[in-house]
Amino acid sequence: MKVTGRTKIIGIFGYPVEHTLSPAMHNAAFEHLGLDYCYLPFLVRPDALQQAVEALRALSLVGVNITVPHKEAVLPFLDEVDSEAAFIGAVNTLVNKDGRLTGYNTDGRGFMLSLASRGIEVSGRKILLVGAGGAARAVSYYLSAKAEKLVIYNRGREKLRRLVDDLSKVRENVSATEELCGIEQFDIIVNATSLGLKPDDPLPFDPKPLTGSHVVCDLIYRDTPLLVTADRQGCVAVNGLGMLLYQGVLAFELWTSLAAPVEVMKKALLSGMNQ
Ligand code: NDP
Image (cartoon, rainbow, N blue to C red; front, top):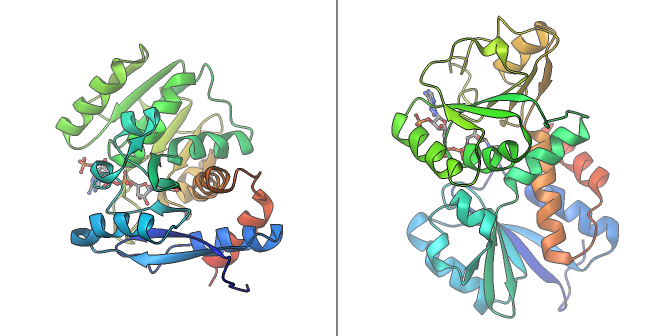
């Protein structure tokens, strides 16, 4: 990559940010298309988030991705938040247009594109979503727009209630469950909790009753113990790598207004994961 006086800068704000695969994915795309852009990681402490957002304007960055723990905290510092990100209450992509900052959330649509890329149909299906954090909010908004019904479970009841109440304002097919039983009655089961990130985590639910007719998704982008077990049961097992890829594809298109080279980005992600 050759950085010149004309190079446009994009980046990611996170804390920590060391393990992000986004620079590899986006820089591969810029290089492939011969675009004079460069994507950089920025370690932004929570108490410096407002200053970092102001620096976006001051330094004329094209935009940034926003990751943990800033996705919700960044909202008050923006000029505009698109309606879907406002509903979700979290932003993962900022676009700087002449000093005016708009926040978007590409996680939920990224997840839907990842299902479509695997040929998984959501329309008319019964879906169980486990989790009610930021990622669950993002995917639930889009899943409920297509599914026959969406049932949500979360350990924390207050967060569960808040999500179901919010979704019920715009959807009629969403409900909460306080128990994880009868999971075999669903067609697609999605883990949107962080259980599976650590090696000694328990499974978020027991996939034993599931068979070859079920799809099990985990938003974690590696093959978690849940997915390994589901795969052994014959289920279609989908990890979160596709979601990571397609949220990046959508962000790329917001920043550049060009079609993203999906295969190039996917290859860069896979090689970044193996390093
Ligand atoms: P949040 O912190 O907002 O939410 C965490 C969720 O996990 C909550 O529902 C929480 O439940 C649940 N949880 C955490 N610990 C436990 C536990 N011990 N037992 C039961 N439930 C638990 O995180 P996010 O929503 O941002 O992220 C969730 C997952 O999604 C992460 O693993 C993240 O890596 C993944 N993700 C993947 C993306 C991708 O592109 N593939 C994008 C974004 C996220 P409670 O409310 O009870 O605490």
